[in-house]
Amino acid sequence: MKHLLLIILLMGLFSCKKENKTTEPDLSTNFFFDKAKGYYNKNILDSAFYNFNLAKNSFLDNKDSIGAARALANMAQIQTSKGDFFGSIKTSLESNKFLKDEKDITVTKTLTSNYNNMAIASNNLKVFDSAYIYYKKALGYANNNEDRYTCYNNIGDVLISQGNLKLAKEYLKKAILTNSSSNYSRAINNFAKAKYLDDKNYNPVPEFYKALEIREKTNDQWGKNSSFETLSEYYLNRDKNLSLDFAKRMLQTAIQNKSFDDQVIALQKIITLDPKNYLENFKRFNYINDSIQIARSRDKNQFAVVRYDLEAKNATYQRLKAKSFKQDIGIVSLILILIGGSFWYRRRQKRLKQENELKIKNNQLKISKKVHDVVANGIYQVMTKIENQENIDKNEMLDELEFVYEKSRDISYEKHDSKNEEKDFSKKISTLIGSFNNENVKTYLVGNNENIWKNLSESHQDEVYQIIRELLVNMKKHSQAKFTSLKFEKNDNALKIKYTDNGVGISDLNQQKGTGIYNTENRIETIGGDITFEKNPTGGLIIQITIPIQSKYV
Image 1 (tube, rainbow, N blue to C red):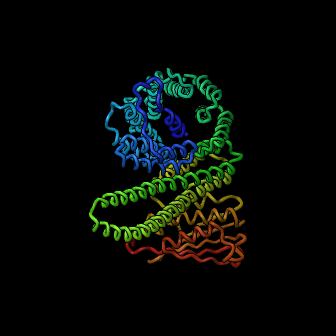
Image 2 (spheres, one colour; image 1 turned 60 degrees about the horizontal axis):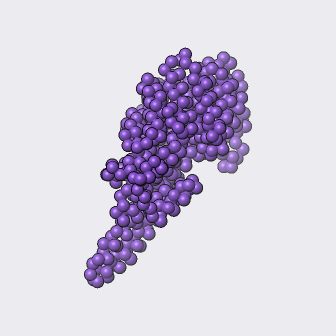
Image 3 (cartoon, helix red, strand yellow; image 1 turned 135 degrees about the vertical axis):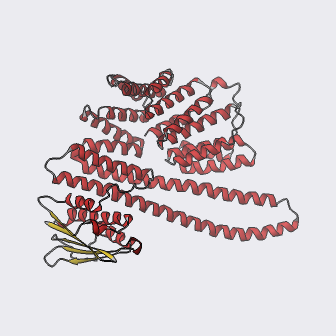
C-alpha cells in the first residue's frame, strides 16, 4: 500500500510551478509521448508504457536527450506501480544518463523524480539504506519548498523503517510545515508514529485521528487506507475489536481503490483477528495473493519483451537508414538483406513470443505450486493442530502462522526456500503424521528411523515431506477414515512407502482423482518414482510409492 501512495504523490510532485514561469522552458513532445500521456491518465498503463518507449526512440532520433529522459522516467514510475521494482530502478538509472545539464530546471525536476522513484522501489524491496541515499539525492535537486517538504516526509518515513527515530523526528518536524493537505496529513501521521515508537508513553492517537479526519474531508482514498492500516496496527495489542474494525474499513476502501496489495494487507490482519471467519478470509486472501503474484510476473515479462521488441525494431530501422546513403548497387543488396532479414525476424519474433509465453506459464505453475505447498497445506496443518489439541498454546499457533506468512512473503519476493533447519528428518516426519492424530482419526507409523532417510538427497526429502502431507490432508478432507498408517522400507536401490486407510476409498481410480492425488502423482514423476493405487480389501485405500535412491548418495 505504501508504494502506491508514494507513486501517486510522485505523479504530481514535479509538475510545472507558476512561480518559475519566467525560467520554465516549454517541454518538448511528440506524437507517441502525447498518446502515452492519454493512456497514462486513463490508467491504461501497459499501453502507456509501450508508447513512452516509442516516444523515447523518437526523441533520440531528433537528438532530444531530455525528452528521452522524461519518457524513461514515466516508464520507471509505471514499473514501480506494477511491482517491477528492480526493472524500475534500472529504467530510472537509464533516464539519468541523459540528464547532464543540471542548470536546466527540467533536468533537475526529472532527476528529483527519478531518485524519488528509485527510493520508493528500494523501500519496497526493504533495502532501506539505498532508499535513504536516493531520497537524500532527490532532496538535493528539489527546487521549491513543497518538493522539499515531500522529500523530508519520505526521508522521515524510511528512517522510521530503519529504527533511526530521533533523526526521523527531525525531518518530519520540517515536513509538517507543508501547505498541501495530503502531505500534511501524511506528515503528522508519520511524526506521531515516530514519537510513539521513540517513547512508549507518548499518545499518538489524537494525531492519527487528525490525519484521518483531513483525509476524509479531502476524500483522499489512498490516505484513508494508510490511516486505517496505522490505527489497526496501533490497536492490535490494545483493543482487538477496534483493530479488527479498522482492518475491515481498510479492506472496504482497498476494494473501492481496486488495490489488491491493500486487500492482502487487510486480510492478513483480519485472519488473525477474526478466527470465526478464518477459513473464508484465508481463501479470499489466498486467491488475491495468488492473482497478484501471477500478474506481477506477467507484467515483468511484458515490460522486458516490450523493451526488447522495440529496441530490435529500432536497430533494424537505423541499419536501413544508414544503408540508404549508399550507391545504387548497395540498394540491390539492401533489398536482398531486407527480404531475408524480414523472414528471419518474423520467425524469431514468433519463437520469442512462444518462449516468453512458456516462461510465463511455467512461472505461474511454479508460484501456484509454492503457494499450495507452503501456504495452503501449511495453514491446513495448523488448523488440524488447533482442531485436535484441547489446550492450545496461542503463542505457538501465532508463531506457526507467522512462519507461513514469512514463507508467503519469500514467495512474493521470489526468494529461494531456505534449507531445512531440522537435521533429523525422521523427527520431522513423526511430527507431521502426529499432527493429524486425534480422537476420531488414529495415525500409525512404521519403519521411520534415521537409517531410512540416510542417502536420500535433501531435495528428495522435501518432496517426500510434501507428498506425505498431501496424502494426509487429502485423507482428512475426503476419506472419512478412522485410522491411517504409513510404513517405510528401504533396499539398496529404492525407498518404499505404503499408505493405508479405512476410509471411503476411491470407487473408480481413473475418474475420481482430485487435485491432491494428481499433485502427488506429479511429484512422484518429477523425482523418477512410481505410485500405484489399490482398493483396501477391508475397505479404504492403499497407496504404494517407490522412490529411487541415486547411486551417488549410497
